[in-house]
Length: 502
Image (cartoon, rainbow, N blue to C red; front, side, top):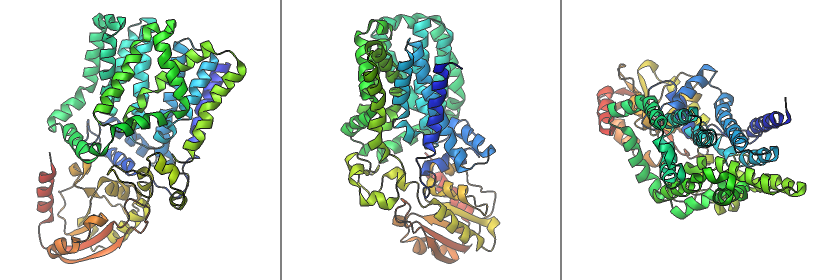
């Protein structure tokens, strides 16, 4: 094993070790993770919320035991693969061992440590953006057509994971037209690669068509409920934080793309980042949508710095900068403090805008942290209500949101299968059973009139319990029990499903 390979493996092992030290006991999985895990039980070519790749990974996780350790392993794996692709990009650009080490440090000690903690499409998204750019770099440097087809595969996998990768192409196309690389568009293999990509993503496009394009409904809801609260200035500010320790390397890379002669064939990447960020800014995108842009620019910057800086002491300083600047991020970006500790010293979080939730208001904990609390408690209380029912087989567990339903399904010890009129759960109701009883899980702000509205439809009804963890976003969520329906529950459910469909 040569020195370069040994160092690469060291970075990858370090990546895995760090991740399993960043979450303290007491935090559960994240709200979104439960939905994605349930998607693994309902494999399809598409879902209302995401394309199918995440469900395929969830299926593998279930096959491996479905434990929290396994759930957290896969995002870290995709983060390690992202680091590997950046390392290979440095080598493709002719970078030295120092350039590889600098790029590895910048990628390792960045916001990717946070992103790669959660089983969401985002980790694969960043990997696919990085691989997409790497394939283009490889084609430009080698002129081997296989890289055009690799580009198509990277795009297709990225598209089947998260539609966000379309913005990478939106940024690249005009950038290519602005540079001499526009000639590559005349290559017939570009057309063949485009057809290959279209063929690979076509099952999802067919699914979208057959289901009345739920992606547009999802985007409309996202724009109305979340993106409307996004501030364009905040988006740009957040871009400086994700790779704070690598900012000087990214800037060096952008400068090199304009002035460094060996990078002249890659000048299109300078225009691509500007165009892509401009589109995201205009659309009021969430800051993390753009994270996939930066890893390849770290590769450009690392190669340039390695070519221009020879002093050993200065090289050592450059490698240490990402590590030193990561320390403040380490203290706030990860669930490695108890809620009590965060509330006692909220200023570091407030200064970084981490206390602002998607509703545009500041709260006592970062939203992601609050979304990792209270789930086991909720599942245990639903289990208790479920075991008290006279006939479980005809008991419906209906929740207000996908986080509740998914968490109950994940942590239940009684085989509960919860559903909701929310996200993909809308398609997962089993109406072949004739339900007589109902366990209703209601968010606290919706629970006040539940007994008054639903109680008359059953012989008996009462509030069984509620989530007591005041730090959880689900604090106050109430578990209601209703027995012996006076109406046809199945008919009522079918009517509400029809109303909720787009």
